[in-house]
Length: 86
Image (cartoon, rainbow, N blue to C red; front, side, top):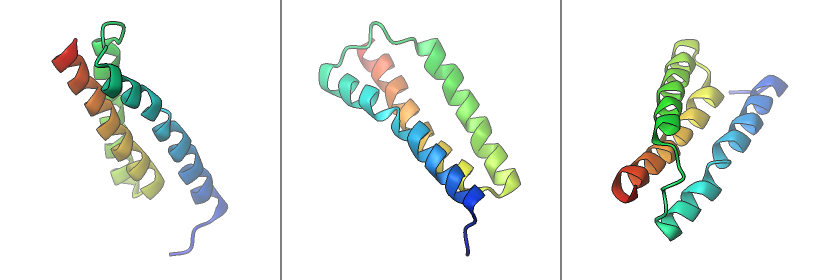
């Protein structure tokens, strides 16, 4: 499968937005401190990302599917930490 510049742009954008969650996940993992993290915000984000995954599947758009699946995992980890340590 040959990828055009639009696909590469999507992959790059998805990589940046997805990896932006990593510092928060790592910090929360280390400190176990979740008092200042909004569970409602992460719940809304979880629902939104789930819808993006569905959109990517309907459009058969691999950059959208992959980036949002990884984001979904990271947001799920944050929600788990909030429930467990909040």
